Image (cartoon, rainbow, N blue to C red):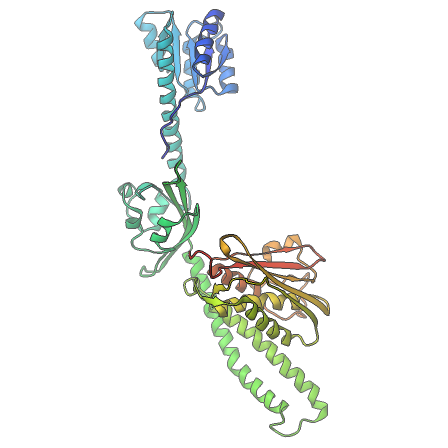
Length: 490
């Protein structure tokens, strides 16, 4: 997974109690581009290793306090220093001493007096060995760690051939073993799953990280996985490795389905009798059953208004219940944003006849059309404008809608109000289901807390983002992005 180093440098610790030897080694090594530090006895050598973390040690055998053999043994016994190469420098010629050095953990020997060419060759060779030894140790640690993670991990090379796969990944993908998957193509590994975005789109994607969903509808029960696909690029921008990290969201999807089914059933059960009541009240208000007595007229108008209010709430619940990740379209049709904002503004204004709303629509001339399902974009705007008026907490309401082109020519739409704003501690709740931000729930503010949750799901369905900015007491600005007719198709 790592590229072969083009240049091997590093820090070298020289351990010798003879100053002339230290200076000679320093001069030769520094001239070759290495950094050097020195120690004069065994105890100092052990301290310097911990403090300096050298890449290689030139270790004299005959040292005061602790000899080189013991220093070598202690370094090899410590996991943090075990991979540092050690060249033992000695004037001893006996084979027995060299065997003792090898048993203590020495990697090589250099005899005094030493040759400069031989010194540099041995140093360079062992630094390369240390590099690969370190990489191997890190790789083994990595493999050991990922086997115990709850997320599945698959890592491929630049041709999408599997290099690493965790046990959890094999389990989630329904594979019998881990070892047999090495070398297989990623497409073959995922052949039982419907992948969103499609594998061809992933292969061509230039973004570093992409959200991915894996669905196996024909499994019993159906299986749903979600995670991230990440590109790891080489020096020329080519795909060097790919990492797919995912988790099991089957239980979450099943709970979502139960919730949607319940909301749909509940809403439909309410809608039919409500429509019947609404029609008859309208007919009474229009005098279809005879003149309405003056004493009843106001009460009847209030009842009609409340029925419409309740009907609007039910429509929102139905719209929310119908949303699913697979059914929402990404492309949509081309929509003129200004026209849609005006229609949505007029519809929202009719709901609040008692509010003095100052509407402001600031769209630059020549703004590109949006590319999104018009009905869904209308729901997003409706929910944001409705919230701006509903939660203003005042009669003189100001609502401003603006838009501009952002990166990749997407449109960034903003809805600003002059309401009470949102407290920092409430930020995480704003887009949650069935949430209204009140200090205490009184029931005086109508709604079921689905507006912003619905808006978030819709915006994300076409690949956009939604967020807000707010200072308590100074209103709030909700911002979302939507593709334009000139945005790259994803």
